[in-house]
Length: 241
Image (cartoon, rainbow, N blue to C red):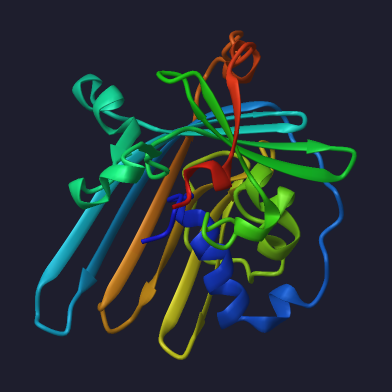
């Protein structure tokens, strides 16, 4: 299992780059987009070789501001503190210290003078954990600010053919492409510069993923990364045994 469960949209970006190589043939320019607060719903289903249908659902929230992206898993109140940290197995008593649960902790991606910084934040323990570029693969993060800020590269989305599928959202258009039985469909909002729906799957029905993004009507005035003053600065390596 990956160390950090980044949004499936990142996986969709990697999927498309592999499926349609022309997407990765050029670098996207540094684009700008409006401030957004988003509610993100993830759904996936996979048919295993044993004929078992597995379904997964979870929600996230995202805040997008100049130079900042904050992505957090939505958890029931009873699970928040309980699952923010895990423990080493009892067999490793000499190293029995708390380990971050990267699957659920909020992650903060920053851009400062073209340099990216990735942090995982635990408010319960007042920790900020810096994830170095060498560990991005373990974090399931591709290192792209464009993908983090827009959820999908706008230039690569524009390369997808327009679909005849109607859109009920003003200013949003469907784009889609299919190859070798695999498909990608994106409902892209040209005004907000963000996808509203991303669907990825195969015609055989062995797997399907849908990510639904809903922009919130008002922007939060309180920004979580401004509340971390005094938090302990930790390194990713601090939790390696």
